[in-house]
Structure formats: C-alpha cells, structure tokens
Length: 109
Image (cartoon, rainbow, N blue to C red; front, side, top):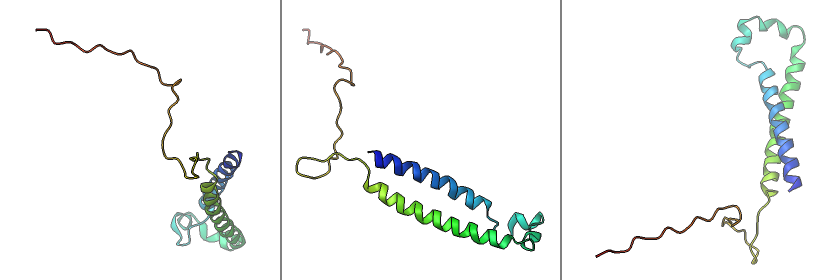
C-alpha cells in the first residue's frame, strides 16, 4: 500500500513538471510567439534552451508511462482463497443502517 502512495505522488509531480515543460516551449511552427517578437530569441542562444526542454519533456513523458505501468501492478487488491482476484464488493454491516421491517397490509374481507 505504501509503494502505491509513493508512486502516485511521484506520478503527480511528473505530471506537473511535464505540463510546465510543455507550456514553456516555443511552438515549432511559430504561432503566437513569432507574432510578438519571438524571432529574436534564436539569436540570443535560446536554441540550447529549446534542446534541453525537448529532452526534459521526452524524459518526463517516458518516466510517466513507465511509472503508470508499475503503479497498475502495485494497486492493492483482495485475493480469494484459490489465488484469484476477487471482484465482489463487500459491505460492512456496521456501516449500513438496518431499517425496520414494514408490515404488509393483510387482506380485509
């Protein structure tokens, strides 16, 4: 159970960093960044930054896929006595209130 919580936390952080790295990147086709003067950033050495962001994005995306697969195997499941996985839901009687029985009307002739 603890490994599932740890993997879920790491996946959440990777999702945040992946979203930020995608939003920081300039679009390859120009887009709005070229409209507002984005062409001058290539002269100042922004190409190295773009390479780093692209590598970081791919690394985070691959890490997210791998950790998602590992977390699917670490989900806590209940097993049956014969080794299979139980798909039945169990209800605790202490949680569910018991309702009084309503008497059925009898036939009056």
